[in-house]
Image 1 (tube, rainbow, N blue to C red):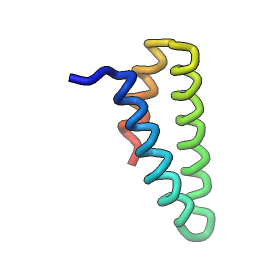
Image 2: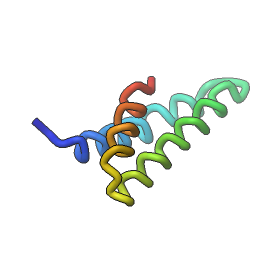
Image 3: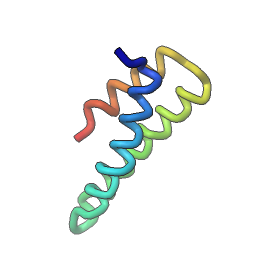
Length: 68
């Protein structure tokens, strides 16, 4: 079983490498709003990791995991 700390890093990579480009590729700026919200979620996750805030890390992990 892996730790949430490792799993959130995997989710950050997935969201950054897969979802952001997919949203940016949507026509007519449709994805721009979604990509912006996703970047904000990534920022929250990075802040939680930097501050070693376990509660915020778990919340961010769940948030990122739910993004599609």
